[in-house]
Every structure is written in structure tokens, then in C-alpha cells.
Image (cartoon, one colour):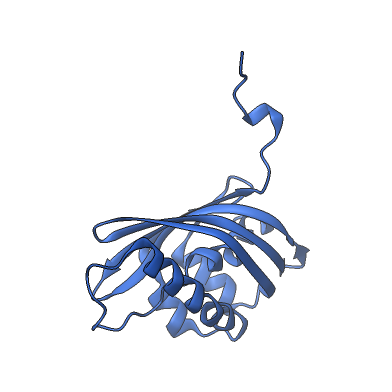
Length: 164
């Protein structure tokens, strides 16, 4: 069984999984800014889905092959996320995002950004400031999240290359 800390990605995944449903009339020539705006608007819906344990909505959001990496370095699958939400292991109180940037590659979107999260996962307070990257795939006129990598907001000096 994965550690409690590895489930922290559940709350953070919401940052990058704001793309549950799309209208079929949306033009295929969307700009990164249009996609970014759509993701920001749908983010609130996803927070509510986690809070209400809306498994149907969450099933649409996370692609079947979803694979994420938590700040602890542990990996999480869609099955892990669905089980944790359904079992009540997560309490997501707030998620405030900023600095969201989207790049489009055909039916793939990559979004980076920052989130201030207030959450408790399996009794452990995981409230913190995070940075992350989400990978989305467009299928049947809607975006699904295929993966997320979440890390600390500020890198440590040992993570930065030296400049000489």
C-alpha cells in the first residue's frame, strides 16, 4: 500500500485536471490562452467533484492511463486516485492557482503553474505551495488528464545548477 504522503497528489491533481468536459462545438483551432481560460473555469467544478466524491465526473477527468508523481516522488495511478477519493481519504478545502501557462501540441496540452493548496489526506495536513506540470490528451471532444508531476514551490539550492 502506498504511503499516506503519496496520496497528496490527489489534491494537487485538481490543479491540472480542470478539463473534464468540452462542448463539441469548440473549434479545433483553440489558442493556448483559450485552453488556459477553459481550464481555470472548470477548475472549480473539479474541486467540487472531489469534495462531493463525484466519481462519474472524476472518472471522466482522469484518463484511464493516468500516471502522476507526488512531491514525495511516489507515483499514483487513476485507480489510486479514485479509491482515495471514494474512501474519503482526501479533504480538499481550497486550491488557489496562478501563473498557469499552456502549450498545445495537437491533441496534447501541457500546462504548468503554481497552486496554494489547503488539504488533508488520510489525516496528514498537506497544505502547502506547489508547482506542477499537467499533461492532457483530447479525446472525443474533451480533455482528459493523462499525467501530473508536482513539486515544491521553490527549488532548493542543491537542485539548481551552479553558474560559474
